Length: 244
Ligand SMILES: C[S@@+](CC[C@H](N)C(=O)[O-])C[C@H]1O[C@@H](n2cnc3c(N)ncnc32)[C@H](O)[C@@H]1O
Image 1 (spheres, rainbow, N blue to C red):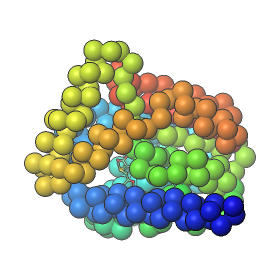
Image 2 (cartoon, protein in one colour):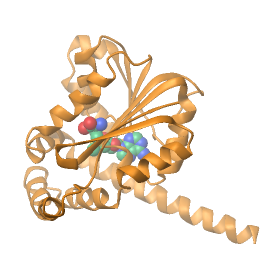
Image 3 (cartoon, helix red, strand yellow):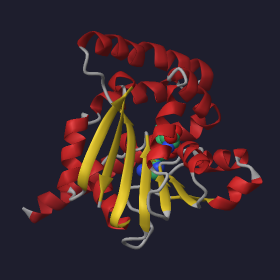
Image 4 (cartoon, rainbow, N blue to C red):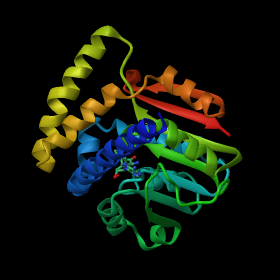
């Protein structure tokens, strides 16, 4: 019985590893056009979404760790609202390298990039006051494990801010949005980055991601308190705040 369970666990681990490698390869390939496709694909809304998070974290406890940071898109939005150092972590070295090439001298002094897996964080427990993750949780194969890991590295009273895609509640808008996701975005992403598959993956992962009420439940199960969420832009994105 134990042997079968170990065998199953090994299989799950190997699927998760393969998924991470796939995601990493995809993000490695689209780095240079990442921000542009984001901006065009969201009709400029993505700037507003990150600003919303940055404003909410204006007085959040330090130090800050921005997970799945990509080319530091959210880290920079946070820096605009407050002067502090930010640890920024991503699995894709290419993303960090590209992000770093865009930073000013001053920004380089306060953003500390780290190449690591967000599901197994290389930090001691209770090291951070605030954790942020924008459009990253969706990419992590084992969300329960990731949320437990986030909880572990937060200090008591620490804040977790999550920004993630979701599906609109309105029946007609949802239909149009699903069409946009499955047809227009892969086309646009494919033209701009030459990697249509990365945007097909995006569309699929958005549809598979737990709805806000379910994610709230998952956060509560990990023992986060005061879990709040707010749908943005007709619910195509949701902003979550939770406290340890
Ligand atoms: C959609 S981008 C989000 C970037 C940025 N946070 C933003 O607001 O635009 C997702 C990022 O998550 C990173 N990522 C995917 N899986 C990861 C993992 N297991 N650990 C850390 N980063 C990961 C990818 O490399 C990519 O840069």
